[in-house]
Length: 277
Image (cartoon, rainbow, N blue to C red; front, top):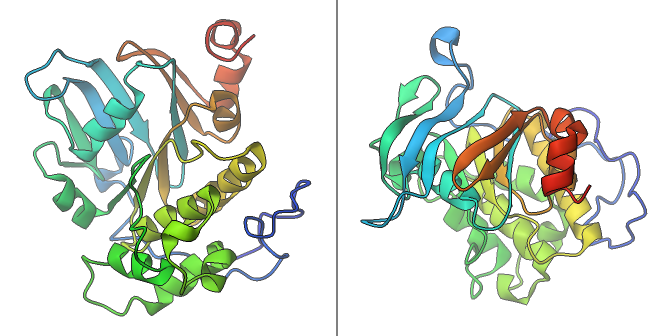
C-alpha cells in the first residue's frame, strides 16, 4: 500500500499479531483487476438495482432492494437478524437468482453471470464461514486465491503480507492453527490475491474481540484507500457505519434507510431502532 500508513498509533491495542508494527512504508497499492472507472461515467461502480428474489423456489427474501458502492468507497449493509443482509450480498455476487432487478459492474450488466465469472470480472467475495482452507498453510491459501491468474503472483502476495504482517511470519503454518482474527486476515488476503476491483465481506468481524474488530476495520479502510470498492455486511452496526461512506439499513429484505454512515448514525429513528438509542 503506497503513501503514509493510516496507523498513527495502535489505539490501545497490544496484540502484535493484529496491529501493524509501526509506521512503515506499505509498498505499492494492491493492483485491481481491470479499470476502476465507471463506464460512460454514469451510475455507481457496482449496483444491485431493485433486486427481488430468494433461494430456489422459496419465497422472496429481497423486495426491490438496491445496494450500491462506488470506486474506493466503503458501503455497509446493516439491519436486524433475518433482514436479508447476507442474502443481498449473495444476490449481488450471483449466488441466488433474482426475479426482477439487475446487477451492474462498471456499467456492464452482469445479472446472468455465474459467481465464477464475476470473480473474473473483478469481484472478490469473503463468506462469513468456511472462508479458508484450514489444512493448508497461510501461503498455500493465498496461492489458491490466485487460481484465476496466469501471471506472476509474487508482487500481490508481498502486498498482502505488507497489509497483514503476521501472515508473513506465519506463512508456513497451517491456517487452521491461527486465531479467529488471523484467519479473517487470511480470508481477506486470499480474496485480494485475485486483484479485485470490488471486495465483498460477509460479517468480517463475527466472533472476534472488540480490539481485533477495530483493527480489521482499519485494514478494510486501508484497502479502500487503494481504490478497491468495499461492500460489507456487518452486525456491529455502530462501528461499521462509523467507517462507511454509504450505509444501507435493511428490514425484511427492503431498504428502510439509506445515507452516509454519519447520516445514519445521527438519525434518531435509526439510532433508536437499530443502534440501541
